[in-house]
Amino acid sequence: MQIIHEIAVLRAQVADWRRAGLRVGLVPTMGNLHAAHLALVRDAMTRCDRVVVSVFVNPLQFGPDEDLQSYPRTPEHDIDLLIQVGNHCLFAPSEQEIYPHGRLGQTFIEVPVLSDLLCGASRPGHFRGIATVVAKLFNIVMPDLALFGEKDYQQLMVIRRMTADLNLPVEIVGHPIVREPDGLAMSSRNGYLTPDERITAPLLHDHLRRLAEAIRAGQLIADAEWDTARALSAAGFKPDYVSVCRRADLNHPKPGDRSLIVLAAAYLGKARLIDNLIIDLGD
Image (tube, rainbow, N blue to C red; front, side, top):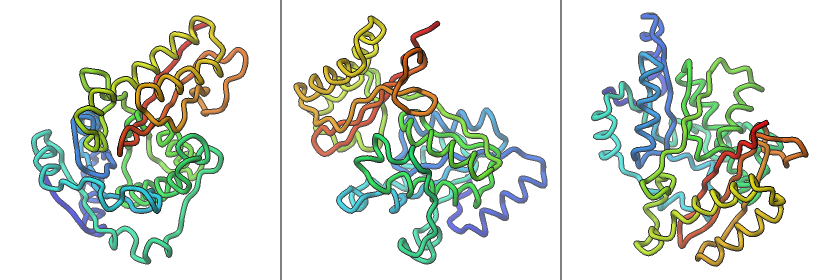
């Protein structure tokens, strides 16, 4: 596996692949890789001839009181996993390489409306930071397609809108949530959980399943959201939001909408957990 730190070197390598007629995929990550990341890489390898995995802890998507400094960084572990899975190229740039004019001197990309909902409401600027770094990675790698996990469903929607609005020739592929055997969605931040919190954490997914069942049974959406938030609080979580939305655009459902998604974020100790579940009401 090639390990590249400079933009110019990566562009030269991708140009060589292009001249050979190879299809290129990108899997952007912030490192501390786990099985869910590797599932994205394996998926990309079935769709592309060459896959670039980027590892970059993007400071622009962290708020002033968030965990930028303590975010887990495991470069040697990441390299070992990527070699085991057969990945072709690791792009691990420095912050100076990505933001040569500094964080405040960077040109930003912002997706309106979508970026202000849900996670965006409690993490101002978060999705502006994501849209900016992903657009830069697209321009650096110029991939044919890029894969993102559906656990971060709002992020996936923001990236799809940004890609469409800017006419970027990149196919965006969402990969289904990868879960632990007890249902907890895999996340690099799960490592913040204490042993007792780790036992409690799967209840987030359990309560989303119960919410979905209640809506299918005819319960009013607002009541189901409230009941779920209250149940999470009783279980020891500090809910940020529980929201049922239209799957296509994350707007509030209207009468007759059948394809929905429930999204939730909740703190459990130091960890902020997010999860979602599709609710298909059929015809």
